[in-house]
Image (tube, helix red, strand yellow):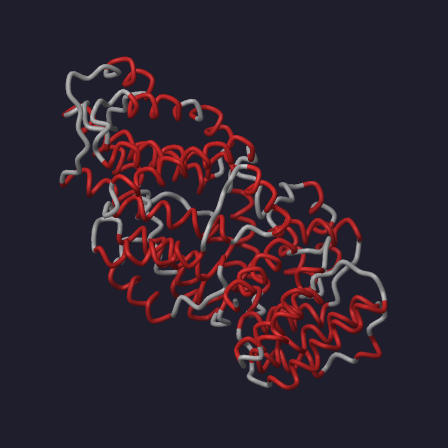
Length: 490
């Protein structure tokens, strides 16, 4: 057990300090690193001890807020969020009462706390409050950069905001415009690199931001060697291991990805990450280990306290029975997709859409998809070669047939074949209105291919085409990737 001072009590006790300061000592540096490693309980113990030892230091306040919001972002526990969301104002009041406003940490801590809670509010669907808090944080950080140009922590937060704002899809651009947000991806990535190069305590967080931005926002390759190095260099940082496994999975190496997941510590010292179970279930599904995958999807649904990925996990439970020819049981899961969780994430929107349309997926095409995603190309070609186009009854299945073939050819280096099949996907989609993601993503992939070959005119044409498709699954992510690629071509 550890002594925990409630923020409001702390605020009442120390609202008017006789002197103020901002500094890291060895204990606070260790607490910060523990938060980044998701050792939240140990970090809070150190922070509370330091709060008692020197209540005038502003750093423990900032770190306590970071610990609380980090836990909320991973747990998505709405009950917990409701209980402690008012803490934000207490943390801010404590920092504002600090009379050492000349310190570069003053505006930084104010901005960080606002950002931490902005991301948390966004997670719990309070988008307006999140946007207002982000605007306030951005203003504080820009002011800090002018006053203290060499202060590394400012670049960490400003870099992240530049990347996020610079990659906002057009469908949400009006929000950024109305609030006066401006972002530049190149500037943001350079700021994050400056943080990494500084070798300060913010180095690990800098690497995390860079990897997540490259892999999930910019569609760039973060490099497996870099990921492997970080995983080996910081074995106590389970986020590095999780991200390494995730990147391996996206690169079609599900076998090694699972090996990495199995090295992640499950002790109580670390914050629970239910998404690890979700990822492991997904990787097993790619391998065709349908029965084994069920354990992890079920555990995710049972243990996770939030609402995201529940529809998708239930859909994949359906697939684990459907692809194993256990149709009757499969349909019981199929019928629960629309009644569980929420459709905020794009994968959940996809699961919700097909469940409502009652379009049961073609088994052969679905096996082809997952074998291709997992890097099991021999099995993928077997599934493809045993699928007869003439047996596919719906227009959707015929389009998906060409799309899955194109993805397989692309991943196995048969570029001419993949281009032909992507073009077929786009042409077939013209003949009948549909709002499936096959044609938009085909256009996006063709843009990547032509950009790689420095045929910028064709690349631009396909990126614009990808953006032009509307009301389909994965619209935001496809539009975001196309938008970023267009800006890089300029």
